[in-house]
Image 1: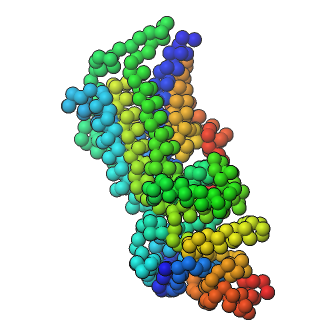
Image 2 (image 1 turned 90 degrees about the horizontal axis):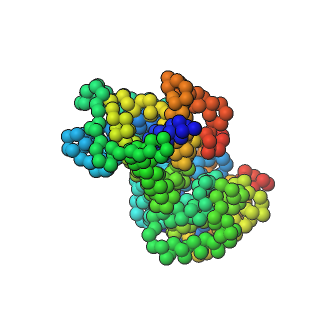
Image 3 (image 1 turned 90 degrees about the vertical axis):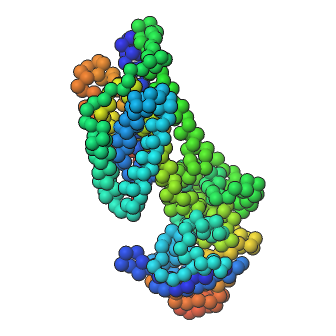
Length: 234
Length: 294
């Protein structure tokens, strides 16, 4: 579904992504794990079109989207829940969710999807008239994911959904991610919480300073000694 | 007491003008964090466009108002496209200096074309020339029209910002432009639209000042522009209702100061207010104190 072919990304003189390649197949949960600064977020930003790449190609469902604008990518079915949630703080929960469906015109289906988001995250229905900035961290994370779902993505990019959340909430968020995947949405997940990410992921790539250094199924990587040492605390 | 009411009514008229200009400053600041110094010159151009409509084409006030607003919209969008858009990723100071450059450019090009002399709007006839008294307080039709048009434009603006798709896009971009882009919002179009609306309001202010004070000149934007900027800061820069409140507050204070003490003090008092706001509540009346993100 998504093919990343040898992409290079620079921030001025800093070579942030050094020719990385990977694929995400339809229906999978794929995770990118790695330390802070490895280039995970940059990879997601490049896929959603916020960051321009220097060379390489991005293919989505066989179509070259390397030079497509961020809007075109949303239209094609790529949607991102960004790092740090980035909800529109002074707007209500409902307005945030409606903005997620900004490019869609089909009112009926939008309201169906709103119901679907409320089913995944019942708390958002209770809070729908509240300003997003007044939500707790976990609720804001749910809103960020819900907002990303409102564009009806075929591929959902999730950047650090566990960041700053209590362990119980992290478990809840990951259960919801699994549920979203079961309903047919392909997921590319960036995480620092490697053990959680590897548990839900079908496949995983490990990034280190701008390169992919290891890949395999979630289970394989969980058993790997190197991964255990570096990322799983044992 | 009568003098107080009379001055307040005059102040509300002047405040309407400041509020309309302040809205443009505040919306543009809200969306690209730029103090658009050229904005006061769009207001000046609005006065000139109105002048040409009324003298050369002998149009009435309302058609002239609309034409002036449309032309200012185009100028505002052009300024953004030509001068600011290429600097989207430049430092804020570079854009600010560019804005000052655009301001000087508009002032002196207008001077080259229209001359540096003060020009007088044609005397208003018909309904615009009338006035009436309540007790000993005199209210002119011009004042009523200025205030009504301002209120209509503000209601329209609130509707656009709160209810329409593009208005929601404007709010989203001003809150977080990256996140807005992830929603599929075209950030450039949204910025252009913000300039368009702000400039249309400035154009309306320009022609209304023309009929109210009669005289216009190429540098007429400087002082009202600065005061409208003070109004925007007073209300909380980036906050639309703040600009409205700030505009009326500055207008009324200015007129009361000229009425009750020496009119030489009126500009000084306005800028003293700016200094006080910056010391006491830097985020403005409606603003929340936020820490600068690093």
